[in-house]
Amino acid sequence: MKVTIKDVAQRAGVSFKTVSRVINREPSVKQDTIDKVEAAIAQLNYQPNLAARNLAGTHAYVIGYIYDNPNAYYVIDMQQGILKACQAANYELLIHPCDAKAEDICDQLVEMVRRSRLAGLVLTPPFSESAEIIATLKALNVALVRIVSGSGEPDGDPDCLYIDDRAGAYAITQHLLRQGHREIGFLGGDPEHQSSFERLAGFRQALEDHGVAVQPAFIREGQYAFESGVENAKALLAQKQRPTALVACNDEIAAGALFTARLAGVEIPRQLSIVGFENSPFSRQTWPRLSTVDQPIAQIAQQATEQLLKRLQGQAVKTAQRFVPQPLLRDSCDVPASALEPSPT
Image (cartoon, rainbow, N blue to C red):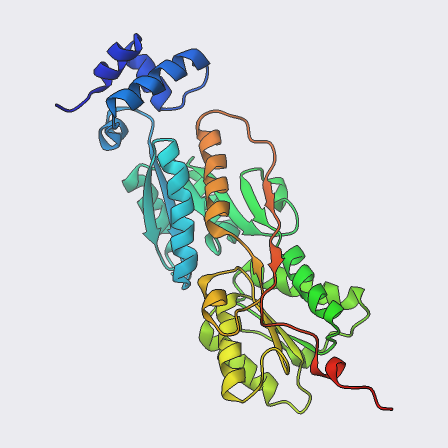
């Protein structure tokens, strides 16, 4: 027979309302009571009926994740991180892809929130960086956590996890500079994503701090896509003066640049060093493997969702979380070929 909440209450020696409070992570429940209830749940292998719980009470137990991102690896990692946090707190996850550029996107999101009876939302770029979308959702009194790119807490909003893409781009560019590169190109991402600007800013700052002039001809706007890396690398390699290294705004772009370079007979990394960003599977599926900036999306998503759940459970959240991506060095970058040539005697 199916185990019920009353069976758990009887085993733990408490009321079924107390069991419900423990399952819902409500504050002010004594730790010894929590321990007894959780032990009974484990002994009986009790599985809460989340759908029934969501319908029965005034509190919702569904977290929504909306996204518009062409990178399937990013989306899957994000889902896994959010889901891990939701399962630990006995919340359901609703995944909702949509078009951030749609004219009626705000109306779509309002309808989705009302129809799905959400407790909260995890917002990722570009939704998390749109003032109009944020204002629309906050007017619905739905709890939010935003994952954004930035080098500081955005607008003093504690309901955020901000990724310091600027620091990550600075660090990987600095590594190339320390290897002796001075002619370094940059392959950008989508302009509607703040991460594109933050990573470019970190790239520029590293050059400036090392006394290296920023060369506008080496900076290419683009999209977070393999094809963008292909086309922009073609343009740079066609120039009379070529860069000796490329910093790509993500690994997919970097993989596209690597593809172009190999077709052109350019040896990686002897003739051209290439680095990416995010440490996605693209960085490990190329040859040589790409040096990159490690940005564990699943971990970031889990941390952000845990912050949202704390808010829903009545715990004060005073400051935004900061995550600093770190360089991960592999095979695609080395000292420039000029540094390896023997000095004239």
